[in-house]
Length: 257
Image (cartoon, rainbow, N blue to C red):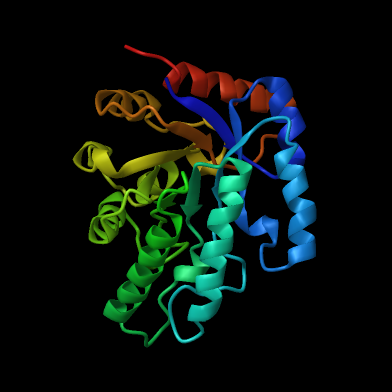
């Protein structure tokens, strides 16, 4: 059965614990890993969270570039090491590499070179995180957020080239809808999917729009996906809205047929 979580700040952990959520997914970049004193304070909050931090998104800090002329290879190397260690200490088994700005191919930068730089980063993660219990999930983003890795198929192609159990992919219902990517793509790349994100129409909370949840959840059951499913969306206006959305997700995903 799937575990149901929500992408939120650690300050929302108490509320989500009271509602009965399985886990919270927090931003890796919020740990301030490159600032030792700040990180120590953040780590204490994560370790004492009333609901477990089982996944982390927003891999790269706002000022870090993974590709392009501003890319700092030595900084990336250190950050990859720090991030793997931190996620393992917290107990987060999944770290999501979305970070659309960090992987944006700059104007005039050769796409083949950008892809090679991304593969180098993924390869370093695979080497550093091997055996740690932490898996990187490459997140496809729609073209409004990044111009590199815009489909489940493209993410799977990169993961296959890295060919490591520490690097897998994520499927996000919102981005798939934005890109008109067929849901059947999930079955084509089922062995590479390690994590799921969901939202609903307008990137609002699951259950509030018209996304094809029955079909999406049905395909996940058909391919035997039993991992985590996180809501990554705009925060509802009320606590009742959060509870209603979680109940909807549990109905859709936390069941066997």
